[in-house]
Length: 484
Image (cartoon, helix red, strand yellow):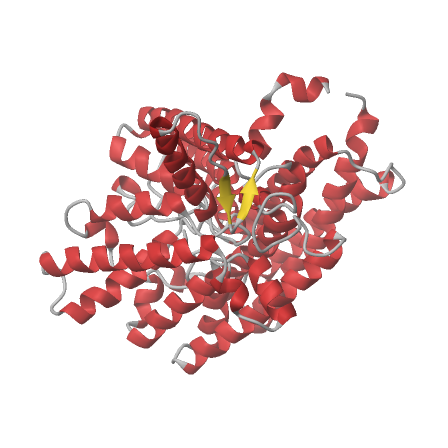
């Protein structure tokens, strides 16, 4: 490829870095007001990131502006990688973190994974604590647009099934004619939900700082906390149930929120098959975990069992990773069960990770269709979603995603098990990173800090792989892409 082919990609990355550098201003203000000593780190981060952005953007500002679909893959991966690297700078400068720790923490925040290598959070400068939470929230903003507007145009992601000729209540891969207009509409919902969540947490007893920062984590279904004890730090049943409610709302396809508000009707939610299956899954997993906790007598009464079970079931299924208990110490296979359930994820078009429920739904329908064909070989059984018939291309894409997901999990697990010499740790961290979950087992049960630096870099890649729906990243590794 000639340099001119990369020019529009670099111009977009430069513009994004200039925009992202503004994100250092709120924590800088916190640092100056509280005099916590982290101000120089944010000033230098602002200068480095904005300077890099200007150096990329200004020479190329007149480069061709039209992008082919194939360029979109490189733009998406380059932008996310650049933001993750830029986000690591305050950790390097403000906490003297190693490069592996800084990149891991930044990537975990931006991809809304919520895994952390840091402990002693209460002793961190308040501006750094704010910044960690803000990273997730900004990542969530990007994920909404990525999932609803960008990946469908690249024919990638769970929202691919919501195409006009295919299915469901969302009639277009983009909700409004232009991505900019789509972004404004969805961000307005995202910001509004954050404000309501903050107010609810504050009214329930959190400080305003904790309410705001934990609403960032909740709406982004991310999982970072300003306390080592996560949500369990507050020891409040009311807060626990509020978190469960807002996690559920935040895990619903944001396109449904948009359409429900525009039409002024909640019927759009009731007609969505993915949301119905997601709600059923949450109830079933919550009851199953509660039953197992009660039978093992982990808690004194059935109500506490239900409370902690529902919280962790929703937290894991939505790939958030908040904690009110040390789940990795729960008896039997409960911790492993929750990590495996996280692979199912939330709804397409939300900030959750994992397979996405719509894919699980289609796989189930496809399996039933094959069983029917065995009984009636000549029958023609259409694959339907929301009353509309899907073409075979969508079904093939779902199977392709599952195949690549399994392949990536197996390969990464083998590599990590060789590095860490512990299969339980390897399996759990790979599942956690690929599903953008956060919690893990083994050496990473309490914190990911003890892991080898090589594992941290590899899991940073796995987080991006999971967040960008696998295809988007792996297509860049094919020789045919670069020949084209």
